[in-house]
Length: 328
Image (cartoon, rainbow, N blue to C red; front, top):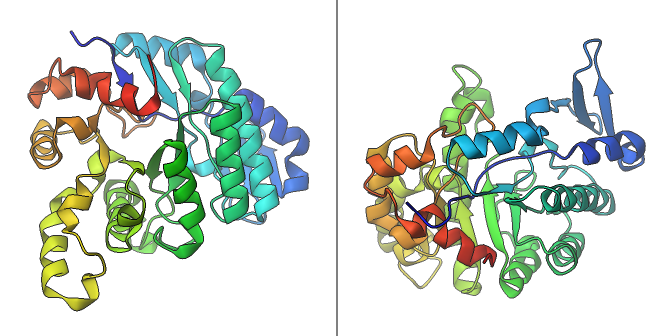
């Protein structure tokens, strides 16, 4: 059996954050709305409301599920539906600050839980301030950001201060898809999730490779969820393009070298795909994930690892995550 099993990909909404937003969210352009049946949703500005699902805030159910799945620790990342990149920087930082403080408090109250920060990526100065506060004051070891920020790829110069700060602090940055590309073509058959999420991760990761972000910040640690999305399968094409097409030759190194800088969770739902990723990236770059509590999550992550030939692998089950997050 592995020494310690750590889930690097799970989501949580603190009840205290919801209550704080009900009290003060309006002055930051956010409104918690309640329908006739008592269901809550978050409306940012004049945008469409996003449901605040109760299962995201249920700590007893979470702890019970962790025990059933053999998990010792689990991260508490925000669901991307509550990330407020649409707001002006000062308001986005206030909403992020409330989440980070209430998330850190929730984690302190329940053994085995690890808080994850969110920051207002739409505003460089505020994003850096909030990241430093989350890491240096609250002791949060990981931050989750979107695969794009209001339609702008992550290699844009506007995000350099954030990545420089993340590299300097040694914090783990997890990319998570949201508001995926070509959404109008993916509205049927749940394709926005099945296809859109992994494709958006590939776009984000490729922009970090070809845009020189990994070249510029060699100590930057980035985790790609859902096994890296579509990128592992597209890697050969990116490598070929880098060598054959001038427009793709934007960085000095081989794209595969930068690819091996990423970390990946194990949420691929198929042991054959996980074995392929292991061969491509190496065990030292894989970390167990579940995507709890969503329907596209992995309900038996240890069995998936077993079927992929990774059963009992301490590094994948928890060792890699423990090292990156500074856990003992």
